[in-house]
Structure formats: structure tokens, C-alpha cells
Image 1 (cartoon, rainbow, N blue to C red):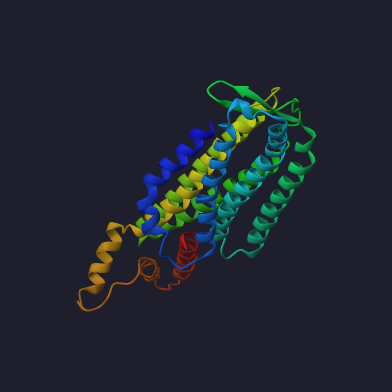
Image 2: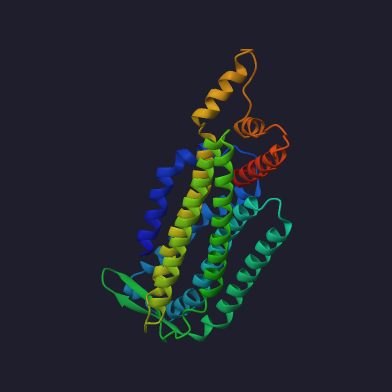
Length: 318
């Protein structure tokens, strides 16, 4: 499973290397940029460590290896869970704050829920997991297995903070994405680009939530079995979540960089008067095209909605 998890990460990296170079590298360093790299590359190191530990020869099953197994099961695996989920949840929270850019109360609530989930997950890993013993057993083909020796009746507890935050973030994001998409569609002007961005964010958020929810369900099921293989599944689970998070960022930036037909025609009309005028960046061009005249029938409201939508887009892809 560790080999499959590492192969999956490397394969996805090969497929998305060109998009990462185009839409991530060379940009001004930002919080989302740092979170992207933390989510993208440390899992490779984690999987390499898991792979090495699982391919030791049976002759290495000494007392020293038993101690190493105990440390790995009760130390390294919980640390991987804590680090990788915290980074992935921070990416989700960052995107969520971008959608609620003008609502300070909701942004504070998002941060508080995220921080509480991270702290709760850390406490649970320290208090609950050390109560379960672990041992190493020989396997065919020169491999060995490090597994718990006790049945985990409280297997659902470690996943509770993560699932709670992910469900909270998913529902909050879906509500705002639908709201912004409808507003952008009603305004018509530059709606193609905005709708495309929000569709990409909705698909990415849904896929990530389904991946993380399925992973937690499998983890809880396997952890209830004696001599569980759940910790073998955990590396695969977080490989999938790392890939899903990376795609959330790359896909949104790709959608924002691809001009819609309406954007292209607008830029042609705007530059027809002077061939020497350089075209505006897509975000600025959309912001200007979305400014609608103030009228008694509510044009000023449309302008405020347009600015709110544009600000959310810029923060989400920054």
C-alpha cells in the first residue's frame, strides 16, 4: 500500500508538472503558495520513510526493530496524520475565507473551527493512540508488518475533529459558491469566466470532501479489527487528499487563466483604438467589465455584488 501511495503521488506529479510550472511557479509568494508546496512535497518524504520501513528483511526483526515499530506506529503515523491534515485543512480554510472576504465574523469562525480541530486532533493522538501496543511480524518477499496488538473500540474518535471541520467547510463553501455563481450568471457581463471559476471550485471542494470522508470511513472500519491494517491505509488516504488539494489550487488557477469567449471579444474591442495599448490582466479586465452603471433600479447593488465576486475570485486564486 505504501508503494502504491508513493507511485500515485509521483504519477500525479508527472501529469500535473507542466500545469504547476505554469500556474504556481514564478508567482509572487503568498500564503496559498506556501500551503501548496507544504501539501505537495512533504508527502513524498513521508511515503519514502514508510516504504523503507516496510521493506526491511525478516532478519531485521530484532528487539530493536520492535522498538522502532512501536515508535513508528505510535509516533510517526500520528505525526503524519496531524501535519498533512492540518495543511490540507488550512488550504480549505484559506479558500473558504476568500469566498467570505467581506464577512469578518464568518472568517473568524472559520479560523476558530480550524484551530479547534487541529488542537483536538493533536490531543486525541497523544491521549488515545499510545494506549494501543504494536509489534512487527515477518511477511513473505522480504517484508514485514507493523500493526497494533489491541482492538481499537474508539477508532472513530481520532477522525471526529477532521470530519467535523471538513463537513463544516464543505457546506459553507457550497452555499457561497452557489450564491456567487447565480449572481455572476444574472449579471451576464464577464459571467463566463466567473462561472467557470466557481464551477471549478465547487467540483474541487466536492471531490476533496468525498476523498477525505471515504478515507476516514475506511480508517474507522479497519481500526476496529484486531491487528489492524489501518495504519497501512493511512498513507494512501493522505496521498489521495494531497493530490485532491493540489488539484483544487491548480484547477482554479487554470480556469482563471483561460479567457472566456466574452472576455476575448471585450478585450479586442477595448484595444481596437490603439494597437500600442497593452491588454489588462484578466482579473482587472473582468473587474472593469463587471462595473455596471448606477441606476435607480438597483444598479449600485449590482456594482457591489460584482466587486464582491471579483474580490473573492482574486483571493481564491492568489
